[in-house]
Image (cartoon, rainbow, N blue to C red; front, side, top):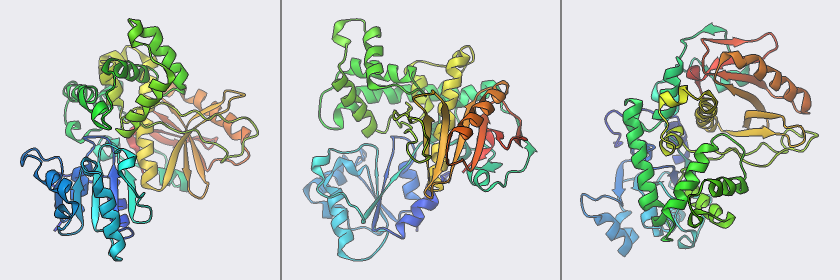
Length: 426
């Protein structure tokens, strides 16, 4: 009998977990704290071991530290929550998966990547790594899901009128974020939770992950720089310059090596989730850029760092546009990965031509998407997509404009789709 929690909301990753448990001996679900990994894993588990349970004074963690076999003998699939607390668990799971052909023995969940030298085997072929994110608008019930990425690829989209989402509501969704704990909360209450998340990150997580002491103030300045550069293509050098220009004293200035180390920590803690450049796949004749687009895992994190409220967003439409783009690309990543596709962005260095999002399937088919907050930017986005179409050798399967303020799903005479993010699903 599965251990599904009362009130659990199904996630898009659920069917993928079910499938992988039939293929692999074990799976490992990674992602940021509070994104719902444990509850989702319980939905597929028959037993559970909590390595960070304070209620019993970390009893199972202490047992695992003495002998991992003492905590790995429960009914399968067995969930081992926060396994990175005892890194030896990984190699033990891999070894047990080698003993027979049984599938779906273990589900590991973790909110941080442990130090690699404590793990002796990659687990390739035995343990399937899976990435989990915060909730998309469709998962949280804030998107009607009247059109899907699959529909766009297959050309099955029907023109229809849909409910329009007001500007204030979009601002609230950005600030609230997709954390399961706060999807039913106001943006104001959710912001307090996310701010506590950042405080815990700075006070504890950045040092605990590998035992290296890091400067809290410098990390905070890096986070602020990342939040200011949300949804932009900014090299590490730009981040260093940004921090130096805003440092209140010389002690807060950072080197490129420090920034690289701190970014690596944020990656391991799943705080940032950068959007890679789409390279070589469409064989453009021009030079294609290689820098990633900067993103936090969830828009609410950037808002908490810069103390952004819905009202502040509405009074700064330039920032609002960038954060709306981040919201859409968070959802596009979740939707894409649930149908075995990948999310990229596109930029040509020579001409400066950019496309906000590229969704690519494994067979090379892809779609090009522009993201605009207001419907008044539709023609500008359409012209950009047409330039892109004419510049590439391999043409996109579809082109689409996602608008914040839009009340219809339509296919324009030029073949470009236009739709609101609050009508999209996977």
